[in-house]
Length: 302
Image 1 (tube, rainbow, N blue to C red):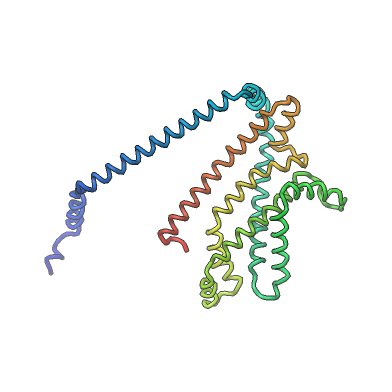
Image 2: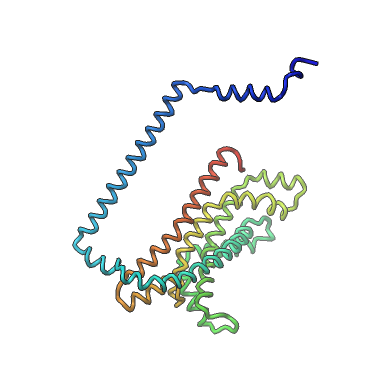
């Protein structure tokens, strides 16, 4: 039996813990940490002071402008804001439903188009050509014109069994346009995966479909999450465009109230509500992007 075997394990742990507790940072390190904290406090104070001065300067510039009293009465009336708030919130539910349904449809259709554009082999050329023409056409076509064509053009055809609901037609126009943008985002993610990943998967015996499903798409989707969230933020704002078809969403509800009072405060109210809804998703996108950058820097993701 050796001396090491006779020493209890708890004794070794106590010695190690005692050594860790006995650690005392050097004077240079303490000074460096103190300097970093002082610099951070100074930067925070400068940023806060600069922001405050800028805000006060802008406020004084606006309120001292010659037309401010009339502008305040026309665009920032508390009376008309309280009057329009219930109707704007009621219309906002339609925008949220459109965001959920159209967002899911856009992701599915965009992924299918991206896969069609990345298929290899001459037999898939017609499919690739159709997918390319689709993305080229709807990315170049302004959304407002696409909405007008679908909302007013489809009912004019008088086709049997085709809906004339402005909400469904407006949602269809949103899906057609945004799926073209999202398809390009997915395609960029798919093509960013190194070819060696596909070759390694095929060498392991996976079929082309299995390689796409289990190797390529998981990496591609993970890489394009931030731009996808940005597209969803834009979609959330553009759901207000269905009001041109007559659907009573938040924007159209504001228009109804403004048309009765000839006051634009309901429009400002609807805009502020959209901004309030967009900010959390924007901050979430920033958090996802920063998290993925940190993991990529640490080698956590491919």
